[in-house]
Length: 81
Image 1 (tube, rainbow, N blue to C red):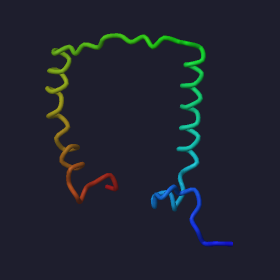
Image 2 (image 1 turned 60 degrees about the vertical axis):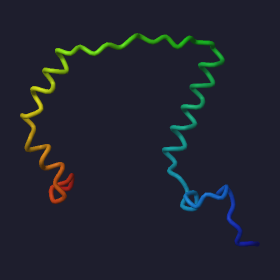
Image 3 (image 1 turned 90 degrees about the horizontal axis):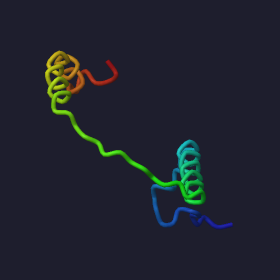
Image 4 (image 1 turned 180 degrees about the horizontal axis):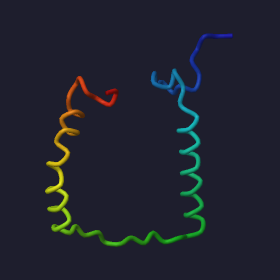
């Protein structure tokens, strides 16, 4: 037996392993891509447009949340508070 590292491919980040959930999600995504390629489904998209009125209404609402913004930016009042 040797102490040589296996399956790290020279990357020190792989020494601690990886999450099972990340691997399952990646395998599911690869399977879906391969299935889509096999079935020849076209990727149809729709052109997106930004309505300036909606953007302006959103910006008008932002001052209502100044306390939340201040609390989230503070080093003392992060998500733990």
